Length: 602
Ligand code: UTP
Ligand code: MG
Image (cartoon, rainbow, N blue to C red; front, side):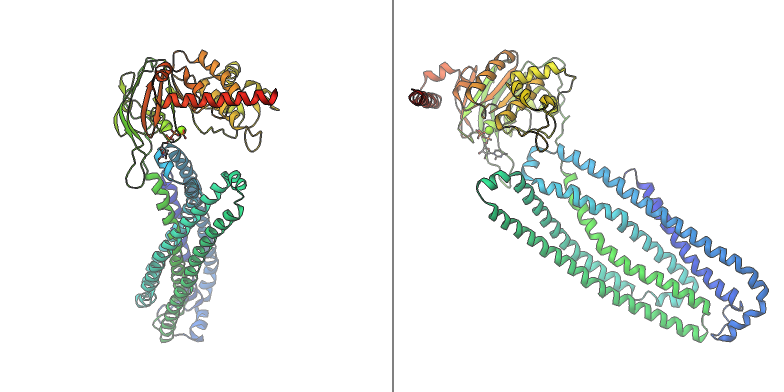
């Protein structure tokens, strides 16, 4: 996770170490100053009392001459410590910012490469939460907590070693309660980790609710469900508040409980130190240095406890981010077969079965699908909603993989092609059109891997019967779509996505209900344009209107995941079955409509 920043981070920790060495050296200098400069210089002999201090006058000339050096020493150490603290902070921040920036980039790239199946089962809000809030917790972890823990551990080590050289007994007494502080911290660490994880989960749920309500705002308003959605949001929000409060209370309990331990430790050390100084076991300078050093042990340790507890957030977030990273990417480039000749577009399905992965058992959605189409043919799929038409065509670009049977493209098993190649060869107009908040031109150009002239863009738009509409917009092709620009109607969106796919000039064209939101007249225009464009490319058309599918070479009538009828229009009309029933029904409705219209206008 720190790749590329390892050394900078090591440097940051080293700088922090040097700064803490300087800090400790400061107390050594203080001892030297007190005992050898201020005091008589008789180390170890001095009983505490005015006599000892006063006797310093004996060697006053040498002592005074040493004063500037001592002062220089203090200044030097302060500069040294300040400088290294500064660099350590800077480098740690750089590591944190840099590595999380990269992590965010990586996560985004990774998330968009995960399989359809993963995205089907993962709420968007959850992913957003992990890519933002959790990554930020990691940033804090690197910027403050980890470096802080490093600094404090080093401070502790350096000061403890220094204390040991000062006076072993005193040093050991100064840390007797430390294990208790650490044990308490670890216990709280576990608690806080768990609470924080619950908190993050709830927050992710809240983001999901928010995100879903906002994208579904029209539905919410249409059904006048604002009050219901508000209640739902408030419930989720309250739960977040409750969990947040539990987390805070846990912190609030933790702080004083370790503070008491640390205080007890300090007082114990002071007391023993003072007694030793009075008894003359140690000098006043040693005692002064001890006071400084012991506070450099105790307070950092208290800090360390807090950091350990705070680090739980970073560690939990780390786990949540890693869980995404562990997910396998959809391998785009796996698959040996990469023909150099253009695809001919012969497709053969043989007893294909397929089901979406779900919790536990996967229900079979497509049963025994078999059909064959020649290069350049038009295959139409028709059937009731939920029959499996979209599922069937989604197998072609390998959005999902079939579980049994075989699909061959130009005689080669689909699994042997790389996904990237298949998707480059296939153009899909999806059932739910989606446009980015960019200009119309950018939307049409989306995914075209070659340079395209304006004339070509316009031709594609003409074929999709959207060119004239685009010209009526204020900025024509440069009109922004979405929040900051025009909002397109459903049919207009569909036609822009159709133009986008046509411009891609794919060998295999898949139109999933591509004209469902378009009026009959416009549809006829599109159909005509398509007829001139279609020759040479295999086309799959999913539609509900018989007129759209009539001209197809092969019509597959689907019901409940099976092909119940297949053949050309005439064949299907010649036999009793679903197709003829749909045809008669639609013709009847149209006749009635025409009669009604005639009556109204007549
Ligand atoms: P389809 O989406 O393939 O049906 O779903 P369809 O024929 O295209 O229907 P319309 O005309 O667009 O409405 C077939 C079945 O697969 C399930 C659906 O519940 C449906 O029963 N399904 C679909 C999933 O389980 N998961 C999905 O991601 C999509
Ligand atoms: Mg569908």
